[in-house]
Image 1 (cartoon, rainbow over the protein chains, first blue to last red):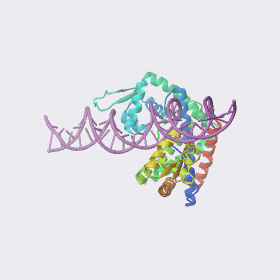
Image 2 (spheres, helix red, strand yellow; image 1 turned 180 degrees about the vertical axis):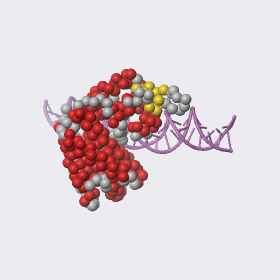
Image 3 (cartoon, rainbow over the protein chains, first blue to last red; image 1 turned 30 degrees about the vertical axis):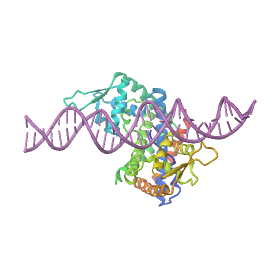
Image 4 (spheres, chains in turn yellow, cyan, green, blue; image 1 turned 90 degrees about the vertical axis):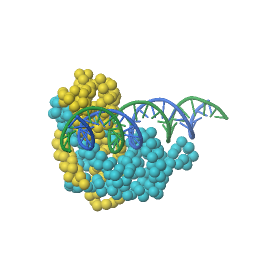
Length: 165
Length: 165
DNA sequence: ACCAGATATTTTAAGTGTCAATCTTCTGGA
DNA sequence: TCCAGAAGATTGACACTTAAAATATCTGGT
């Protein structure tokens, strides 16, 4: 996982810039700590209950709705990770017999990755659990609050994209 | 980082569980993608502008407000990462002469880590930039929206903590 | 004084992540 | 046809991450 940390909160108190400044930083740290905690819990569960990892789960999720499979490049684009990274994860999934990688098109550079039957069945089980875990973590948040959050986070996303520099 | 991904959105459409279910998953994925994008941008900037990494920045941030330094254990507790992890990061910071690790108390098991003068100065510069980057990314979010988000995220955090299982 | 267990830290093994270099295969113009 | 460069994928070097094993040191009870 990922990385850290919620402690950049540290220097927040110092460095008094514009009033807006401190708020952005504090909001960012709160956002970060929420998603880190949720993600960490999912990782632990995935390991405990299915002896797998989040990246492997993510690859399988991307493949699950593509019966015809995805090329390595499509996979890395879908997951927003580097090409070389996908190679390693797919290799491990192949060892576990959860996916296959074949060269079948006319272009022999292109490798297509596909879930096996075992992979599909395994993923179904994992996805059901995953959904339950997330549900449970958000159980204390009302539908109205979730809707609010969806909207506000869309705004954040928009702000980020708008200020690409 | 690491890690991924915003594409678990994939299977969200299938697996129609309770109506609340799908919302949690979608909210979680939106939360995740926001924080991943922000974090990635900070990583890139830190590398481009200061040839450093986010974990190193985080360690320095934790040390910055502790003139007397922190032990390795205090550091890993503050950053919410494993003990062994901190060892490697601090080693690299030592090579860069940004921190020092000394054994000074009566207990020779305990190593104290402290920013050097160079480390302190370097961190000040980095923190100022870091703050600007975050500010800019949130520039399109109003103060009212930020306040709302703070409140709602506190609720999320509370919900997560309440449903530890 | 001794030594069993506790505590602080480092080391190790395996996975994830990046970028840059390399390998293979294709493609389009001369 | 031929070949320079583009495109898909893997490999290698490095950094980060964890959990578990190994080291080193301390502490308290006998």
